[in-house]
Every structure is written in structure tokens, then in C-alpha cells.
Figure 1: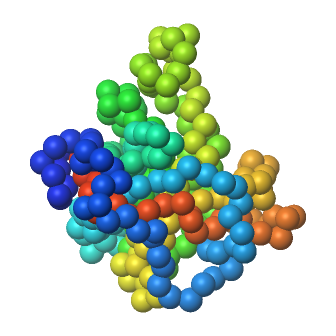
Figure 2: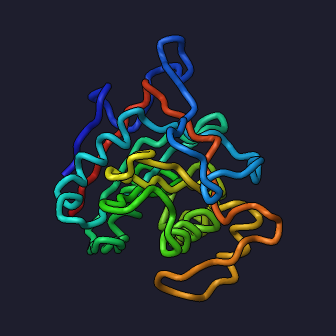
Length: 247
């Protein structure tokens, strides 16, 4: 199923003039008390800005409602195009998946890669619910996100930004701007958070961790937390996106 999200009937583009006066672009703000696992004193690295639709979290929450009422997680992939040094998230893909109250496993991921490839999009992040938990990144979430932030193996066959030597085989795309959105409808302090691993601290911890399942991680030696809130993600009122629900 493919659905389109307000404000436009068109697909995968922003209105002409992405920074026009009619466009409202605002940094994503978080309500509730700051927590040590979600905030660091300084950004870990200068990253390119990412724009998401103002309706992204709202629309995903609605799509996940049936699972949420059953205390089951829901997950989706976020894909973007890159224009003038800014990522614009234009596509939400909800794959076939198997869920529990505290986990969600995507199935048939080749279908996700196919959609990204057809539209020449970057896999810049993912979104999932915590139906009955707080807004945080679990150890399993951190390992999942590591695969997005450090390197994604994608079956892109024709991205214009890359040399023709890559056009006939899978290759690896580095996306340090990759982010994770956690939607937690029962968290009274904040209903969602947008996170990334700290770099280099958090990245080194995950790179050296071979444990599976839920487990604790040691703190990075640089004194920063393992992950932090993103400071380079903005809500864009003029950004439209399409939703692929493959369940």
C-alpha cells in the first residue's frame, strides 16, 4: 500500500524553492527533562542538516496504532535525497515485520532496498515505537542503529553521485547523518526522540561489542554518552513524503 502525506499530492519532492519564505523550517525540540543518555555537552561531529516532514511522527504513530494497542513494536525505514548538502526525508517504508513488546525484526529487506534504489534515495534512518516503554535507545536499538550510521550495504544500481564502476553491483554507502526516531506514546515526559550514536565514543563501543540481546554497554572513554539527541534534524512544513506500507 502506498499513501501520500500532507501537504501535497506529489511524490518525493519539496515545493520549488526548498527554503522559500512560505516554508516553515524549525529545529526539532524536545520537551521534558534532559537525561544523560540523550544529551551531550557538544555535538560529536559537524554533520549535514536533515529535514523531515512535520507530519512524519504523527503519521507513523497512526500507522502503528493497531500494534501499539496490542503492545507490539512497529518499525520503518526512512529514505532521503541529498540536495545542496541537505538530506530531505521523502519516503517512509514499513516492511513486513515480526514484533514483540520490546523488539521488531524487519523481513524481506530486499523490498526496502528496491524502493530506495528506484528513487535513488539514501537510507538515512529508521523509526520505531516503544508501545509501553519510555523514550530511549535500548542496547538492541543501538546495535540496529550502528548498521545505519557506520555503513549500509545497499543494492543501489544508479545513484548519480557515484562513479559508474558501482552501477552494476552492491556497494557500501557511508551515512554518518543517520538517525533513529523512537516514538513512545505512553512516555509522559516526551512522546518521541531523535537520536544518533556519539562519534567517536559511542561508535567505538558498538564496534567492539559482539553481545546480542539486551545487555549493558560501558561508557565511552571520552566522557560522552553512548548516544545523543540529534542537533541537525529539522521539521520542514513544506516537505512532502510518501509512505510504503508493505505489511
